[in-house]
Length: 294
Image (cartoon, rainbow, N blue to C red):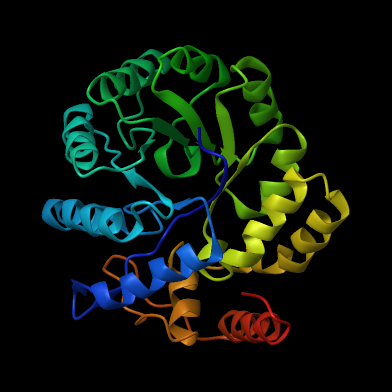
């Protein structure tokens, strides 16, 4: 169902409001690059600081711009099952192509609690659902055996895996049906995960260079392994450096340098710190752009 490159799109702000002019331009750039889709209202989109009204409006406008061109998988996760269901129902009514639902954070449910949480969300909507396993932010790990159980629910079709554990990801791939896709949640593991059966990436770096990230995934899918390796290694330093501070601080700074949006974030996130890391990142991005990266 979900394969290829899905960009975890940023939310641009101007004077503490969503900057829809910049957002439209960012989406058009993704469409032009031919990515499989975008994921609004995820962590990279600063979803924790969006109001309920902003969240719904942003998803609706994303669908309006992208409909018929690329897919929209809307982030509707919450650590309250009831709230996650409400967000999912609203997004589904707006015509999204899928839902991204993250592990409930902070309250640390058991595996049975995770199963029942995602089962309830899936039952609330006919939209295809992508699970999002990111223990580093949620303090709970969605285990392969639980993903297997969830994969038996017809509209739970994929998982964004951000454990950083290729062994666990491989076990998940070995257990789930062929139709259930596992995508990387970490840019630097896109190629390694595809080598063991992953089917793409939900990417941060594709905010910056969507065409190049798409070329990486497409090359591997066509069997052009050497080309995929070359692209992977050409981006490897950037994969690391976009996390020199908490995501999306660095990627938003880069897009500001490139002229696509302001560098405005909402508290408690702050702008990228001054210093050597910032200058090294800026130099790296400039070098890649000079070498034709898009």
